[in-house]
Image (cartoon, one colour):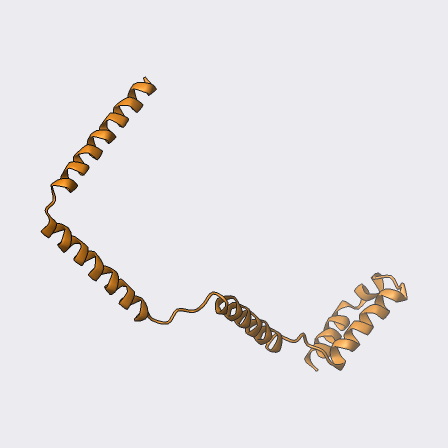
Amino acid sequence: MNDDHEEELLRSARQYRDQLTAHVEATDQQTLLRLAEARRAALELRAASADDRPFRVPGVWLPAGVFACAALLALAVWIYRPVPPTGPTAEAAAVEDVELLASGDEAEIYTEDAVFYEWAGAESGAS
């Protein structure tokens, strides 16, 4: 069945080729000259319009531009990044926490007078 389909396709292609050849041979000299002139005019127009094209970014500049934008973005993020709070109070709180953990005292000591420790924590946070 596949061979029959190929044979039909080949027969149809030969028929179209023969028809095209007959039409080309039947075309008079005047029509051929007009067709050649139209082709030449179209090629000249195409060549002239190639000179009038707007500026296009060359392929080398595109990656360079992308790299420059990425570097600028990285610099902006690095300059304006949020700075964690530092200073004497933050360092003192960290030292106190380490001393508390290293002391080995039982946590029950701090539960006896919880109100006092809550007040002291609120006062140290406020100042």
